Image: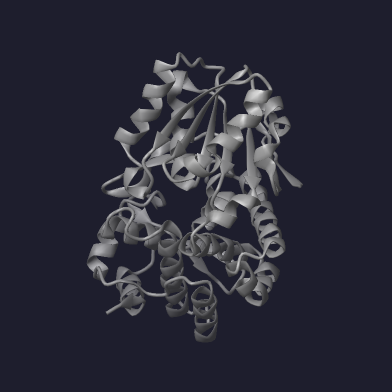
Length: 361
C-alpha cells in the first residue's frame, strides 16, 4: 500500500492506494466519528463489492445503512440525489454519521454533494472503484450533479476524510471504462508532467491490458500530481483550472449528446484533441505534437474526433462552462506537451475552426 497526503491544514486527509483494501476496515475506523455509516453505491458496483466492504465493518461493530442508486451519468441529477437524502432521514442518520461513497465518479460526486448538504455537512469517505475515480474525481473535494444545460454546474467543494483506492476493483472494470480512466491519466502528463507523458507512451499497452504494476504506478503518479495542485489551489482560483484540460469541449459533447451517451473520459479525450488543435492554430503547439497526442489516445482506446454537433452548438454549450469569467470563456490549452496554460480572449472564429477540424463528419 502507498499513502499520499492531501495537505489542507485541519482538513488534510490520506489517500491509500493498494490491493485488497476493501478487506481492511482498520483503514476506515480511525476516520469515523461514530459507529454508524451510510454507504452509497449503485446497482452495478453494489453486487460486486458492497458486502465485502460491509462485512469487515460489521466485524468491528459498525452499524451500516445503505442506498443503491441507478447506474449511469444520466442519473446524476436531483431526483437521484434525493434518494440519498431519503435514506439518511429514514435511517435517522446524524450529522456525525459518516457517508461512504462506493463506486465510480457519479456515485462519488453525488454522495459528496449529499454529505456537504445534509445537516449542513457530514463526514464522508471516498472508496472509488473505477480508474477514472481513483485518479481524479475521488481526490480534491469537487462534488456536483448535472443540469440539462451543463455538467457539474450544481455542487460544492467538500473534502472527504479518506480516499481508499483498491486497485483490485479494476479487475471487474469493462475495457471501455478502463480506457475512459486513461484519458484523465494522460491529462496529468500533458499539463504538468512530461516525464509521465513519455512513460505513458511506453506503457499504455500494459495499462490497457490491466497490468497491475503499471496501473498502481500510474494511479500513484496521477494522484501525486493532483494532490500537489489541490494543496496549492483547493477551490480552483488559479492553477487547479489546468486539470480541466479537454473538459470544456468534453462537457459540451456530453451535454450535447445527452448525459451517458459518451463516457466522461471519452469526452475528455476528444475535447483534449480540440484543445490541442486550438493550441496549434495559435502557434503554441506543433502539428507533430498534435499527431503524437492523437496516437496515444488511439492506443488507449479513446476517440480523437468529437461528434459533429456543429461549432455553433459547441459554443452555445460551452457558454455554460464554469471557467466563464465576466462573460468570457477561458480555455485550458497547451504551450507545448507537458505545459498547460489558461487563456482567454481567443477569437471565436479560431475556436470554431479548431472544433470543426476535430469533429467526425
